[in-house]
Length: 94
Image 1 (spheres, helix red, strand yellow):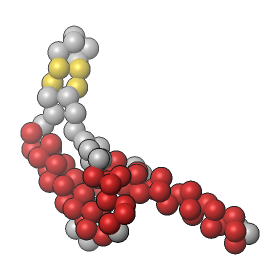
Image 2 (cartoon, one colour):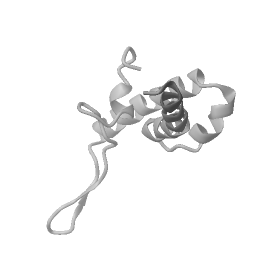
Image 3 (cartoon, one colour):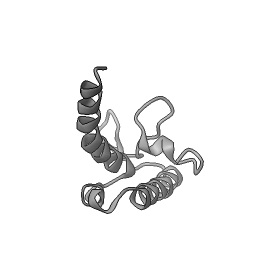
């Protein structure tokens, strides 16, 4: 995903890009997100979802199909693998 420059829409760490959303001003007015930023984010997010869905096994497709974004799909994969990874580390005595 780094090679395709889409990892920044998936992860939550430094350098990550959140989906642009509308902002509410102090006077209550709502300002929509910048269309160019939103289009850029949507393009990167779609590419990241494609990469994730083409690289995971068939049995993991269900949880990621329901995700609304690449970040959500990645989070679902983390849930599936986190418990196994913790158990594996425990079994290895880490």
